[in-house]
Length: 567
Image 1 (spheres, rainbow, N blue to C red):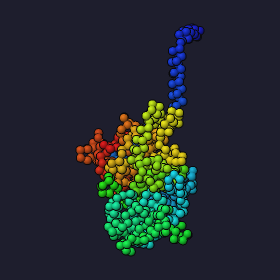
Image 2: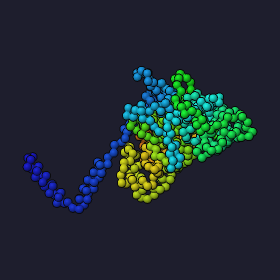
Image 3: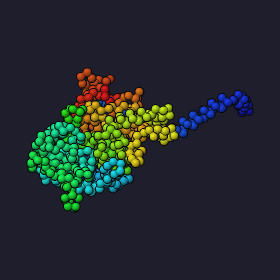
Image 4: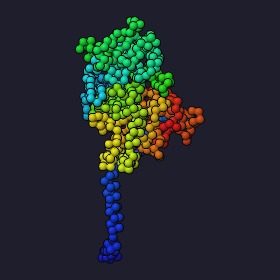
């Protein structure tokens, strides 16, 4: 066929098409062009390759009878994180750093960041007193408090120090004072009934208590617990004029009573400005936690070594890769009580990463996330399941109109279908006024939200759909962890980029193990582990586990993506 014939056929076909063209044809072509243009202009790349979410933990190819393979995030054959990897100035760059202890966390906080893009940068320490007053503490002043409080407790022959305080600078300073002066720190959950406080003192053998007036039952504690020898009041500004050193009648001279402020103010100005020289070979005392599964039950007392804590701290610093990892540009706010290991480990990881940290005394007691973040605009928050469940319920209740639901659907689709945080758009921003105002006076800076379900404590369980909604409501990535009594920090926690919602969204999973733990399941009762059924009792081992290994007493299952879930 000649070229001329082809051109004639093409001309006839085009003439026939144009001859039949009408308004319907115009509408159809316009719609196709708009659809293609929208698809091209709004195409979103997933933030992580789907294969990294399909297999989130590694395991060896063999297993023991009645057990699953051991799951871990580290490559099989490589050691788990055992410490902070501290590089001493004169050490060879070709050898591994030492594990360190909590003293190295504070030394890093005062010396500054070692990251290439922020060498020497230091975080700030803030105390939030409502929306009108935020106090910034100099790091050197906190160092002086650490030294003077530690020296005072040692001079009074104290050895086991119970810390019964809300989240505060004094809480952290006392914890570090115990590490620098080889004292056992005992972290008591705050705002407990009188009989519970006395029970915890008796079981831990504490001889010193650091607490706040009005929170600690001094008279009854001394009568019921004669071993108490020393009490340090942390007095707020409004009560400084009172004489807190007076011992009530009938107590005698058995208890030495002093105030935090007097210990600091009565010392010379140049006293305690330098941290004690660290002996890397010295054994530092343990840190004692109390785990209360449910109200009215006896608390489980757990002793974590310094090695347990620093391995959990380092695992958190390595869980998120640059550029989203902790940095001096962040502001961290623990909205959960520091007497629990998960929020404490994250707070210490923030200090070790030279992140600014804000302390608010309402943390741990208020289920209102907006109230807990008043006065500051944090970029990273650790909260409780109760707090986030309340935030989710309140915000969901506001999304009632058709446009509001459409806006939420668009943002959810970006997370679930595209694997990316929602981008700013007119429709996506329609619900901005309905979302929780986290941070003041400039909300909207939150980028990372941590929450852990305490094993067996009856806390609200956050489903995949709930976590997805919280990402939309807060504009932050949410990391959901499982915590347990004898595991420092988290047993497992969800990946940074895991936005998936499976099925109807009611499922719950806790992600892969951290870099300081490994998990496997063993047959228990009617739950038999076989080649086709990976369901059994959860066992955790690793440097972050008290005693090295613990069976959690809960039945779990390993999903096809190698993440841990309850059976």
